[in-house]
Length: 82
Image: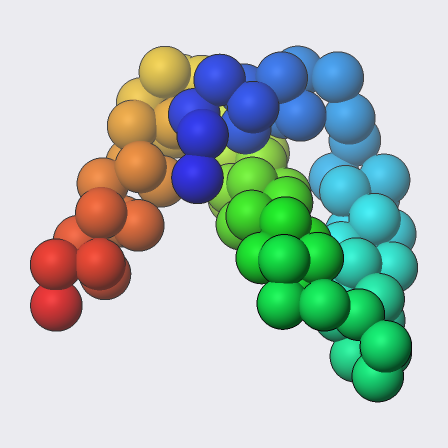
Protein backbone atom coordinates (compact mmCIF):
# COMPACT_ATOMS: atom_id res chain seq x y z
CA UNK A 1 0.00 0.00 0.00
CA UNK A 2 1.33 3.38 -1.01
CA UNK A 3 -0.65 6.45 0.01
CA UNK A 4 0.83 8.63 -2.79
CA UNK A 5 -0.27 6.04 -5.37
CA UNK A 6 -3.74 5.83 -3.81
CA UNK A 7 -3.98 9.64 -3.86
CA UNK A 8 -2.98 9.72 -7.53
CA UNK A 9 -5.54 7.04 -8.43
CA UNK A 10 -8.23 8.86 -6.44
CA UNK A 11 -7.52 12.20 -8.07
CA UNK A 12 -7.27 10.91 -11.64
CA UNK A 13 -9.74 8.03 -11.89
CA UNK A 14 -13.45 7.62 -11.47
CA UNK A 15 -14.77 4.89 -9.17
CA UNK A 16 -16.18 3.15 -12.25
CA UNK A 17 -12.78 3.05 -13.96
CA UNK A 18 -11.15 1.78 -10.78
CA UNK A 19 -13.78 -0.98 -10.45
CA UNK A 20 -13.20 -2.06 -14.07
CA UNK A 21 -9.44 -2.18 -13.55
CA UNK A 22 -9.91 -4.14 -10.33
CA UNK A 23 -12.00 -6.72 -12.19
CA UNK A 24 -9.28 -7.17 -14.81
CA UNK A 25 -6.50 -7.55 -12.22
CA UNK A 26 -8.51 -10.08 -10.22
CA UNK A 27 -9.09 -12.13 -13.38
CA UNK A 28 -5.37 -11.87 -14.24
CA UNK A 29 -4.46 -13.33 -10.84
CA UNK A 30 -6.54 -16.41 -11.60
CA UNK A 31 -4.55 -17.40 -14.72
CA UNK A 32 -2.53 -20.58 -14.26
CA UNK A 33 0.70 -19.41 -15.84
CA UNK A 34 1.49 -16.33 -13.80
CA UNK A 35 4.40 -16.29 -11.40
CA UNK A 36 4.38 -15.47 -7.70
CA UNK A 37 6.18 -12.21 -8.48
CA UNK A 38 3.43 -11.22 -10.92
CA UNK A 39 0.79 -12.08 -8.33
CA UNK A 40 2.62 -9.93 -5.75
CA UNK A 41 2.71 -6.96 -8.12
CA UNK A 42 -0.94 -7.38 -9.05
CA UNK A 43 -1.82 -7.73 -5.36
CA UNK A 44 -0.11 -4.44 -4.56
CA UNK A 45 -1.99 -2.79 -7.40
CA UNK A 46 -5.28 -4.28 -6.19
CA UNK A 47 -4.66 -2.91 -2.68
CA UNK A 48 -3.97 0.57 -4.04
CA UNK A 49 -7.06 0.49 -6.26
CA UNK A 50 -9.24 -0.69 -3.39
CA UNK A 51 -7.82 2.14 -1.32
CA UNK A 52 -8.70 4.69 -3.99
CA UNK A 53 -12.23 3.30 -4.24
CA UNK A 54 -12.63 3.54 -0.48
CA UNK A 55 -11.30 7.10 -0.50
CA UNK A 56 -13.88 7.99 -3.16
CA UNK A 57 -16.62 6.50 -0.96
CA UNK A 58 -15.44 8.35 2.16
CA UNK A 59 -15.13 11.67 0.34
CA UNK A 60 -18.62 11.19 -1.08
CA UNK A 61 -19.82 10.61 2.50
CA UNK A 62 -18.33 13.95 3.56
CA UNK A 63 -14.73 13.25 4.62
CA UNK A 64 -11.87 15.36 3.35
CA UNK A 65 -9.41 13.73 0.97
CA UNK A 66 -6.67 13.85 3.61
CA UNK A 67 -8.87 12.26 6.29
CA UNK A 68 -10.09 9.58 3.90
CA UNK A 69 -6.53 8.70 2.89
CA UNK A 70 -5.39 8.57 6.52
CA UNK A 71 -8.37 6.42 7.52
CA UNK A 72 -7.58 3.88 4.83
CA UNK A 73 -3.90 3.80 5.81
CA UNK A 74 -4.82 3.23 9.47
CA UNK A 75 -7.30 0.52 8.52
CA UNK A 76 -4.66 -1.39 6.55
CA UNK A 77 -1.98 -0.94 9.22
CA UNK A 78 -4.46 -2.08 11.89
CA UNK A 79 -5.23 -5.25 9.95
CA UNK A 80 -1.51 -6.01 9.60
CA UNK A 81 -0.95 -5.66 13.36
CA UNK A 82 -3.55 -8.32 14.14
